[in-house]
Length: 124
Image (tube, rainbow, N blue to C red; front, top):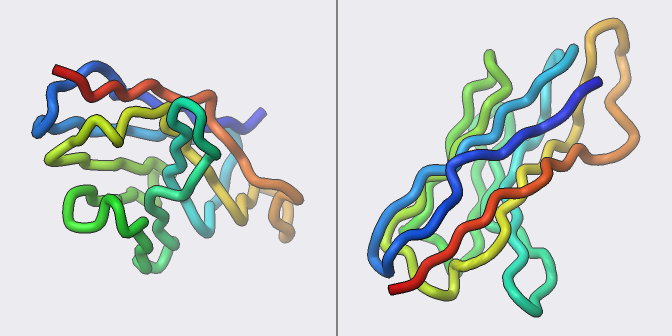
């Protein structure tokens, strides 16, 4: 089976930094778009940042200039460097993959691939 697994979450003080990782496992040939989403207490899940396989990136306005997304296409691994963290960044962060192709198929998976999430808490 194919899956995404997040890691790197934890407790950090305001102004601190944290680096999240998302590792893909299984017979995955490629992933078109990989992104980070988050869901804070009482909030809906929102896009934080995403990156296409070709290098195009997109950030939410609230994290622009503070967060940096990157990925290793060969390993199908994605990272999120979070700097100048604020209490508002507290949320469960989820890894997402869209346009997932597995070995032996010319077609992409019908639906998105989601990880289980990792908790990020920003508090003093």
